[in-house]
Image (tube, rainbow, N blue to C red):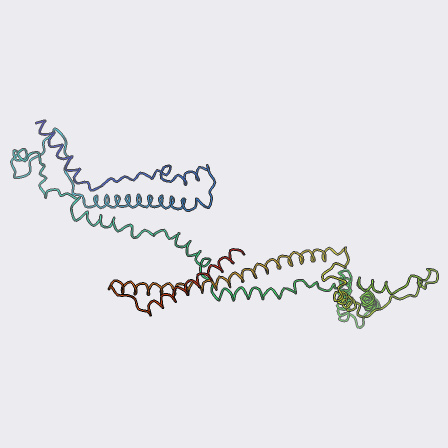
Length: 424
């Protein structure tokens, strides 16, 4: 009895193993220490990454990505098969070794032992799920899963971004360079120094006087509503403000008129002789008025322009007040801008020349390809003629010689342009 019970238990375990459709694939991760040595060295910080190692590192990263995607697909397929198997699994009876199974209704008890250890459950016999159509769709779905995974298009995007830099030169590129060079001719306004305006102290004083006058006018208007006529104090304040405004305006006009520029002052000092200087006692300092020179700024500009035309003064030379920090900073920035603009202009001119040479070389190479195709056609025609054991005609020989001469001339021109570009 015990031997029969053990045989029954082994049959149950074998039946259960046949029912399981899982394949248990190897999903161990890739050993990157042996397969990806460059990636391992970079992650550990042993060596520095150079430009020569980028291609090797990219291949190793792609290998790791492929391994990860493959393991992910295998696990997803096994999970799907397991879920489907649990949903469609046929309940099996529990087989305990050493115990007898109850005979089915209407069947003799000895029939179970005569079946050679097979278990009869009263229903339909268990079927194998490995080869059944129920497991086939899951296997097909597992095979179709890699198509839904987005492919790695990073290399395609990388080369697409580099394509404009490696493309051939066109007329549009030459036109763009010419426009850039012409646009730099309008930079003269950045080197122009604006005329020095009025001092902020005079401007603020005038603004304060105007503000006080407005406040006085408002106070006078408010007094008219309460009294029949304004008080003497209000009238006196208004007159005093007007007098101060007129005096400030006259002072500003006189100061602007008498102030000469540094070049004009030097010119005037050269025209005045030292022997004509009078003594301090004879000078009438009490009622002396400043010399009013109309158009002092215009005189300064004319003197500067004349000196520059005569070559006695360089353009942009610093003859202004050395204490003016704003003007010194402005001149320093203009000098840096002028140097940078000159460098950019030279680079653009060099680039335009190289682009024109490259465009000419591309045209020669295009003609060379046409001549090469013509030479190949003539060679095929002569070869086919010789295969028929016939000699090539005089016209074919002349065409071949002319095509070869044209090709040699084009090759010499291309080599000459390439050598000139290499020198630059």
